[in-house]
View (cartoon, rainbow, N blue to C red):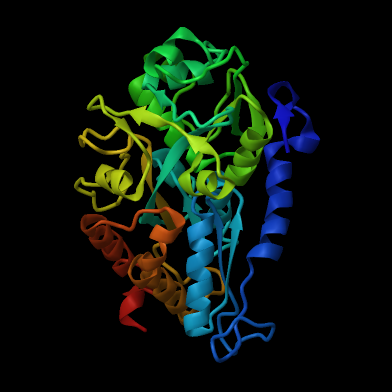
Amino acid sequence: MIKNYSQTNNHLLSPSFLITILSIASFAIGFVSCTLDGKPGNESPVKSHSVITGAGSTFANPIYSKMQSEYCTKTGLPSSYLAIGSSGGIKKIMSKTVDFGASDSYLSNDDMSLFTSNVVEFPTCLGAVVISYNLKGDSLLKLTPDIIADIFLGKITKWNDPRIAAENKGAILSDQNITVVHRADGSGTTYVFTDYLSKVNEEWRNRVGVTRMATWPVGVEGDGNEGVASVIKAIPGAIGYVELTYAMQKHIAFALIKNSSGKYIKASLESTSLAANVDIPADTRISITNSNVADAYPISSFTWIIIYKEQSYNSRTKLDAIDLLKELSWMITEGQQYTKDLYYAPLPGKALAAAQNVLQSVTYAGTPVLKQE
């Protein structure tokens, strides 16, 4: 779905309306059931906890869907995941209508203050936000931070702009108009992108800032990473930001980006992993965009899962808590084997240790859940 920016006040196409529709559609698509022998099927498994539910990040949807499917096959425990964007996932875990929320931006102190009970968060893997574009030919573009910022600020409007041409000698660049594509919904991918731009461009920092829901100076909208990728592919001359997996799946070109060391870096498992070669705080809240590691891709990020620190809330049973914590523990350990095929980077050692410490701190009736299994 493609919308002009001027249409965003239409309540029928508002982000909240779209999130509702996407939630219904995603549940129908995302639910996984298993038979007692662990094979996907139509029968309901004999489990006290009927289904583990999560919602949020579209950035992480491909890997979470794969992990949940594999875990279902392994254990017979079904799961569902609603890919409604990070803001939607935070709202759902805040309202306690899912077992976990998923976000590509860690919770700020202001976010934390809105919860009625303490929550914890931990990373599950890393991904890269790439700058994808739709141009004729096979030009592999090189873009600097300031060029990217000025394109998304609406200051560079033609593909043959002298600044783009200067960085791409030999590339065939026409006077085609640039169409900026961005997210319509509150998005962790947007947060990662705006976090990066705010670090590298003062005008962006002052005009737009770091946010999950930007006030975009120019552009058309797409819903989720999938929607943005589809819009880019549909419009000649389009450019937008998506998680690497979506660019690969849609066969859309993406740019090499000059990093803080002055090197042009292509997004890959290796260059994304290098950005996470840092010490991880105990609460795991850390930004790794614009890394100072020489060969790191500059728009890299962890993606986080958010759960309540005390699991004995509402009508949850001890088994509910154990089932959830066992699945989440599997995701950050055995489940990491599925990351690379989907173009995510697995957790490095320091991040894994921090994530495990967070999970070990989660309690049911005051006792650590992982000691009760």
